[in-house]
Amino acid sequence: MMAFYFVMITMIIMLFCLFFEKGRPEVILASVLVLFLFTGIITPEEATAGFSNEGMLTIALLFIVAGSIQRSGIVDRLFQRLLQSSHSPKKRLSKLLFPISFISAFVNNTPIVIASTPMVKKWCDENGMSPSKFLIPLSYATILGGTITLIGTSTNLVVHGLLLENGYEGFSFFQLSAIGIPITLFGLAYLVFFSNKLLPDRRSASFTEPELLKKYTGEVLVTEQFSYINRTVKEAQLRSLKGLFLVSILRHERAIAPVSGETILKEGDRLVFSGDISTIAEIQRMKGLQLQGSSGSYFPKNHQLIEGIVTPHSSHLFKKIKDTNFRHQHQAAVIAVHRQNQRLKSKIGDIVLKPGDVLLMVAGEQFHKKKDFYDITPIDHKLVTQRQIRLGWLSIGWLGVMIILVTIGVLSMLTAMAVTTLLLFLTKIVTPGEGRDLIQWHVLLMIACSFGIGTALLNSGVAASMAGLLIQLTAPLGLLATLLSIYVLTNIFTEMMTNSAAAVFMFPIAIEVAHTLEIDLLPIAMIVAIAASASFMTPIGYQTNLIVYGAGGYRFHDFLKIGFPLTLIVMVTTLLIVRFVVMI
Image 1 (cartoon, rainbow, N blue to C red):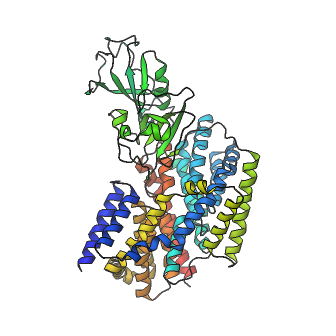
Image 2: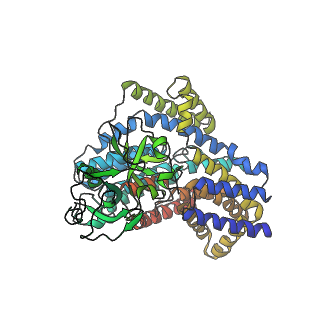
């Protein structure tokens, strides 16, 4: 009984830490796993079982295969062609979303969104349209498309691996298509017809509505060359800059805020501005004002401005920018920070980074983004050689052959991905070093740790207790109500943590429900897989949502407004298909 309450309390604390971003997700999950191991709730073998799970290993290989396709430039070229359209908004959106959802059924959706986001933003700027009308639908389309096949999302592979581990056959390659295709078609139709009305119009050029600006916070040093030293802020015209607001003046570690028009400017003052990215970047043209970065006034000779989003697994999370050694690691300096329309009042170096923060960086030719942030800088053109394109098509061809072999039962999913990866290495399309860099190790660590935590839920009786409670509450209403409760609970978990972790935590409960009701586990596993991927109501439940969250200047409630109806559409469609098609 002590183990039951200990696991229950620990899980509640873990969910709290994940939801309120009290640390990096993989660190939180790893800490909980070690705690359960130390207290004897799970054995060393159970704690490490996730690191050798077939689904987890398949995901690792799939990162390499999908990465080789994304790096070839084929996907980028496709997006550029899709955006060359002058149709009506509905036709334009459908022309973009349907191909993207199809691609995401076979290629990891995170690199798809990373590659397409800067193109969509640039295209919107050139055509006088708002990126906020397109980026959330872009993310949702890739999530929906990922539910169509076994390799469309890591969640499907994780549940597949759990089924195999528990003695079941697992999913076939297109088994989830019975649900994935209908929910994708219904979901895309909803986005095409209603997203334009439900999503905000947030264009950075709309200076007449300051609340709609993507507010960056930047810092400027007043040098001896400034013409308005010992004169007022009003005289220097620093309160009438287009799209900018002077938040505070830092003088000898003392903050002057709010700043009045009669405040006298002194040499060495640091002016903290909040406002439009382009105006902050241009302010350095004013003689005597020096834009400051996280490493001082660091501007390489051939510098470029780069915009990036801090990932949920960045090594810089919850650290002050000045403590991250940013210049050494990335050959860049942070000159401005945007956090979901908040006005940050501290110095650039003192800002503590959080997931989803958008950084404006000045970088040299040796810029390295690593895996600390997603690069969303609009790119005028991307140089791709014909050889890269040919090798990209070769990678796609091999993947297609392996999919056919898996579908007809010649190879297992793990074997097919292993053979494809070996071919990539032998033909030098991907080197072993590049393959190592393409793998998202933090994702694998979270998934592997989740397996051990899921076992703790079983061993302690928490899973059986939750399953019993669900059945007790829903039994009078019938089997459909029980399936609904499983979907809703999984969906709540996935909005609070990663999709794969939510699936792993719900799987023990699904097993207990299937055993108690004496029904087949496979339909319930399908519900868990779909519900864990269907993260539409918050920006933190799915990586692609977090990418567009900062890039589109969205607010938290924007996701809830457009995501709640889509969640209902996907939920109702999934439950009806499972109950009246799959289970008959």
